[in-house]
Image (cartoon, rainbow, N blue to C red; front, side):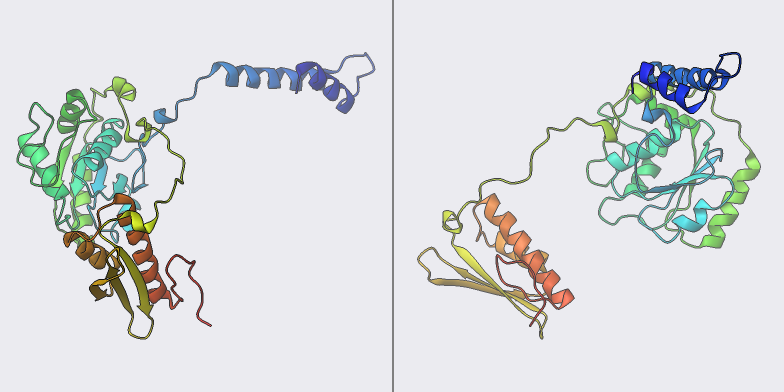
Length: 317
């Protein structure tokens, strides 16, 4: 609303006094002008709040000294987040982007001085072991965590200064694989008694670094031209389900309609992996189509729905 119209509105809402003045309208207009100027001149940066990056975590007491990583264990998070000196508790799966988020959220809060590592480690990514190695051995010149055994333990989106600050600021309380809530609570109490001062070298320039939330992607619109099934020279597939047996059946035919292979199972993923391993699919689009259809078939079996290939799921008649 233009200011002139806003002034007229105020004048109508608040009649003039006997002296001809309108102090209430003037006061409100002054307040609104100040607010307007604030929003015009003030540059808000959502990353100046805390935590600075999104993730699978619960924020507790932001003034607390303890951050907790439960690795892949969900059950510990809610209770730990309620403890007084816990600033943040979260899960992590990957030894690269996952650890980067932990580092950014911790070094942006100088009050956090401890990281408690607990819960079950990922048997695939070994993120807990990677965090142990980061504190024990550090990183090499490629920012790879030395002696980490998980998949691609490289902190490529962080500066060396970010990583060094994390190691210097934080004391690791290693309780890897510990899921006993009483044992963990006792550990938190021990750490709280140490009462460390906030870290004095908080890196304020880190906001200029790239966050996983701010990575620049090229946007693509959903959709595209569907490739006919006969485009794959390896043949085509007919997918059916048996609700009583909870079974998915996939029949493979060659391009000349001759029968090829038969595979039956309960898992969409297992069936698709078998098709790929036996090189029965030559096109990425065909593999994507099969993955979607097999997943739909598995969903139908779980929810007792009627499955027909290339059709929406329906309730059985």
